[in-house]
Length: 345
Ligand code: HEC
Ligand code: HEC
Image 1 (tube, protein in one colour):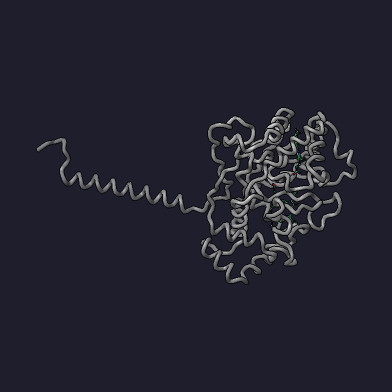
Image 2 (image 1 turned 180 degrees about the vertical axis):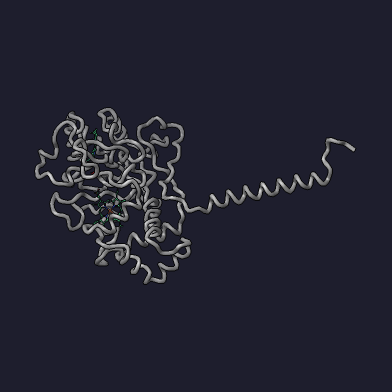
């Protein structure tokens, strides 16, 4: 008998142990899969090849999201029952056809300079913080606040859940998607998932970044060159051409004092941190789809892009631009308009 080859009995044992270990591994992986995922931002794909050194990156062409959650979130986003008076939905202020904003001077019901200009709901999941002041780090946190803020939806969770539970369609949809059914957490999760589906890829500028040199005209390319050379890109950069840092509004001069009537909203990040150094500091806004979302700035004080660019050149860079340069940058900004669900915005 060969001493080094195990007997049939020992071999069977080894097989058994291997089988048990394998079964444990499968169970572990399955469990990992099953545990509910926290709300995460969509992963940004690594940008291919050619334009990897540019300070702006393209929006991913597709983001993998649960279709049923997106559909349910969309329904909630458009449902007026989320508001106290059953008259206002998220869509009332964030229309898909106006760049994800209301194009109003201020949010509905806000007094002049008292409130704040509506931000776009498109591409918001790529911003490092939410709101002009960067108050929120997560979509779900912000939804909580919007639903209960008397100036926005003015409701509360108790009422919202009662109203939604009265719909058998909602009850069934939630039960199908979430093991614990219709809860505040799951309402927020569905809306946040839908918000992550509101991304606008394939703008002409992104086509250019991906290597199609023909996607931009010579004037638009020149506008982009000035945008970089002048230093706009030091603040407006990354995947959202903004949305990844805080900066003072009025680096080279006091824009808000010159405008007059300084309000609480003008204090920006100070309202969150109460640090005097954060007065007039704002999250740099994204310039994605910016041509579609006048008026501009947190106070809505610039009516068109030319005005906004002139203010930026003077107060952020201290270097006035000629009319021709402003026009070229305006043309470049126009190439940042993307597509929603395959159709141009
Ligand atoms: C009355 C108008 C109004 C309604 C209704 C409204 N919003 Fe907004 N939304 C705003 C305004 C104004 C801001 C900017 C607030 C700020 O920065 O302080 C904003 C900001 C946001 C942002 C942040 C975008 C960014 O880039 O930081 C998101 C996301 C958003 N809203 C989603 C929603 C959702 C979801 C709902 C429904 C639950 C909703 N909004 C309802 C007016 C509204
Ligand atoms: C020092 C940082 C900084 C620089 C440099 C800068 N910006 Fe801005 N930009 C901001 C901040 C902060 C805001 C938001 C101001 C506010 O509304 O409170 C802003 C807002 C804007 C807006 C309005 C966006 C909106 O949705 O309301 C446009 C357009 C814009 N910038 C374009 C430019 C251009 C073009 C340049 C170069 C000429 C430039 N910016 C340079 C920080 C900067």
